[in-house]
Image 1: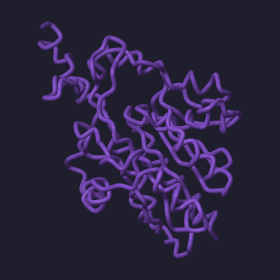
Image 2: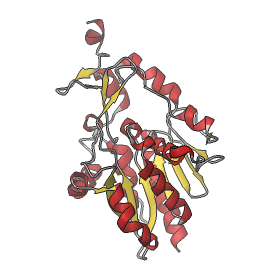
Image 3: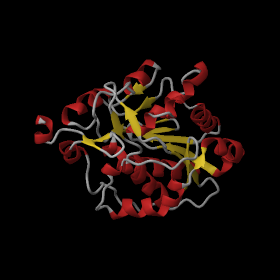
Image 4: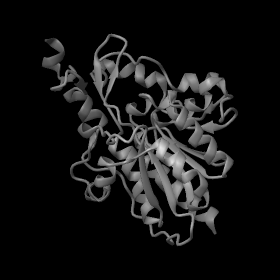
Length: 284
């Protein structure tokens, strides 16, 4: 009751899950992103496609048994895609089994016309994405058409994707074909999929920016999460040999070889600019 009065009680949704409290939404979400219009020289070559792996799962069970209403964070997903689209790249949307992509709609920037535009443009693909198996079966032989794989953030990226052998296969394929891999916030949870079946971690020794476990541990205090995370991400990546550049949930972005990463939702715009320009420079 006290938490409700103070506005820090997570909000119960119709399916029994919890979205962030009123205070957490004020502190951690915005109605406009910081998307920055950049005049890119558009890419017009053959390697124009980017595979985007979205989560199709909504609810994350916390250590206390409560469900967090999650999915892909709209700003983390769509702001980088705005930059990549404006640089001349196109997207193939996929989820693990081909079920619709899930968004954290409570974080959607309702007054941001740029984000709303690309969301509605791609909505049919979000509702009817490819499955990862379909991509493996039909597109592995078409690597010459692809520039990158992008895994957006949102806590939902840690549901199923880190244990999915198909995700691991796609990330290894991208590495073997010298494509770029782009991710941010909790999206690098996908990198854990490269260790499925006791395979070596693909990104051992890589520098990367990732959402800090230390921040996830603090957010239940303001009702962003309804409990503590079932497991951490940044520390797990460290134990596998990743070199985490950031200690805060900030605008840090990082490129190491063909891996491009960002620390948090705040890094979405900077990640998009870095990824778009890097891909353009590489394709020249």
